Amino acid sequence: MKRKKVLALAGAAVIVFLTGFSIFYVNQKEDEVIPDFVLTYAENQASDYPTTLGGAYFARLVNERTGGKVEIRIYDNSVLGDEVSVMKQIQYGGIDFARMSISTLADIVPSLYILEMPYLYRDSGHMWKVLDGEIGKQLMETMDNTDIVPLSWYDAGARSFYFREGPVETLEDLTGKKIRVPESALLIDLMSALGAVPVPLAFDKVYSALETGQIDGAENNWPSYDSMRHNEVAPYFVVDEHMRIPELQMMSRSTWDILPEEYQKVIVECARLSANYERSVWKERVDISRKRVIEEGCQEFLISDGEKQKFLAAVAPVYEKYCGDQMDLLQKIRNVQ
Ligand code: GCU
Image (cartoon, rainbow, N blue to C red; front, top):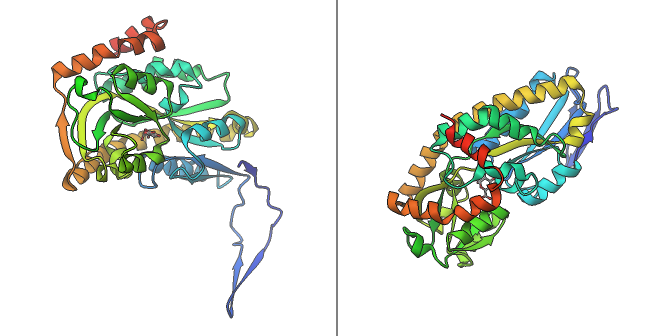
């Protein structure tokens, strides 16, 4: 919850804890700064995950650059709820900041669907040129009249499939497989278009769904697969890199509106710096995660180019549904060099 923490406890506040026979006195230090704002930041990844580290870096910078007047507390590991509920809370101001996958956000801000279309980017460099350039900026501006203030794009690499019982290396073999997807309209349609049975589930429910056989597989990037320990229950990782879904670091507009302009500026600048930081951590983490899970027994498979063409052809209806009226922008994205 957002709390404007105006503490009237100036001077030497003494808190006494009684623990057995011991008495501890905790004095407020004379030079301690009392924050004007204590704000919440929701993150659904673990504390050592690149996006969480990016968030922590952001919080530290903001604190330093506001002379301790703005304190941002990171709540990781989905403790404030899954992405869908965090999204709602961001919208009404119950949570101040979040880092979120575009897959969740695009259902609220449909202009963002285009950024997560399957097989859209040639590679990571292509995606970053799009996001860092005019198109990324314009798409952020489409959120101007929403309850969300976009701050910066974060990296989430490329997503591939993984399975419990053996690799699925052809489109045909994917038919009828129950595959977990984020709670996202586009991902649900995508999985249906590929012939699989989409099972929308929150991120923190995937491990047990794999373990119990509620689903046959899921899809994500190497760091998420490793961090959530999905390799323990779905050890067949099939690299097809069907999607790059950027993440957005964002703020609730109702919190933004009550902040003085000088703090708003600091937040924007620190978000930008934290995104650079997150991207560098991300690059390292992809290799670390891949290596770790392979050492632990994960088997890696590659989809052939011929098969990839079949996947690409199968997703044509998804393009039609989500970007049918944005073919010009789609072409612009493809043309970015
Ligand atoms: C990625 C992303 C998460 C998202 C997850 C998912 O790991 O970083 O924010 O929730 O994908 O598949 O749900």
